[in-house]
Image (cartoon, rainbow over the protein chains, first blue to last red):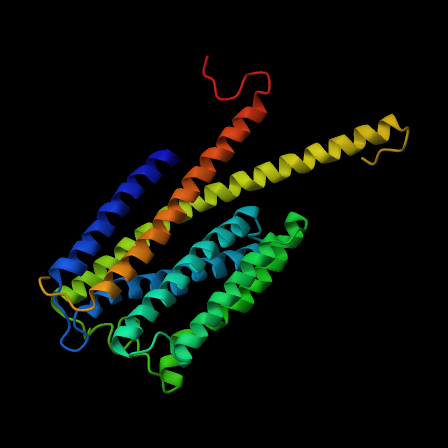
Amino acid sequence: MRTRVSLVLGWTTILALGLTVWLALFVSPADVNQKDAVRLLYLHVPTAWIAMYVSFGVTTVASVLWLWKRTRSPKWDLLAGASAEIGVLFIGLTLIIGSIWGKTTWGVWWTWDARLTLTAVLLVLYLGYLAVRRAPAATEVRAKRAAFVALAAAVDIPIVHFAVEWWRTLHQPASILDDRRLLDPQIHGSMGTTLWVGVLAFTLLYSWLLLKRYRLAQMEQQIEDARLDEAIAERRAEAEEAGLPVPT
Amino acid sequence: MIAVTHFGYLVAGYSITFGAIGGYAAWLVLRQRALGRAATDKRSPDEPSGTTS
């Protein structure tokens, strides 16, 4: 059942991504000011959406669910880690595509603009989160540490979002997630359609990657647990051979 | 798209994006297969690994 879901989702994602590339490169027109460089935004916006709001959002919610004793379950810890890893990939891509677009439009690869700088900080924070997850510790201890780091890192998400309003920045204000523009979008016609198809395609891609990464995390955990059981059994056997008391 | 401006930038942007995503997806699939094989081998240590007969 899980394999079939993964297969259907995988093929749907490939088709949706193919449609996005076709619309972005061959159907939507060039922008009056940005010319063809606007086609980079059909990747930049969906990757930013996936990284900042979806991936890190899921990590935050899963971390809260792990910390809350009523809902505590190892699956939330695994889900948080899986989603954060995908988020790091996508936030890295957001910065790279944004940098390429910036060179074509602003004339520079990088500028210490509030939105850009805070997004780079977000990347570093979640890299730190992944590092904490890899630090050797008991499963429970590691999960607790990681959950607290995830909550601390999540503080940067709304700051990145509102940076374009709170400070004077070179980066343009929100195009989609803005209450004044949500019902009155400023992007029209095939450009808007391409952007929405891209957002949908990347959301499907995230779902497929999360499915795979979560399953992989489960397998890694099972192997780690089996190795731990094996090591404990070996130490017990050694203790018994030596005639030492064996703890139960 | 006949006369394209910023062609090199577009190629770079799209190649990096889909290259990185494709690479990550391939790593996930291959690692999952490798761990699955390792788990199967561990469950049946008497059977020679990698054979079906």
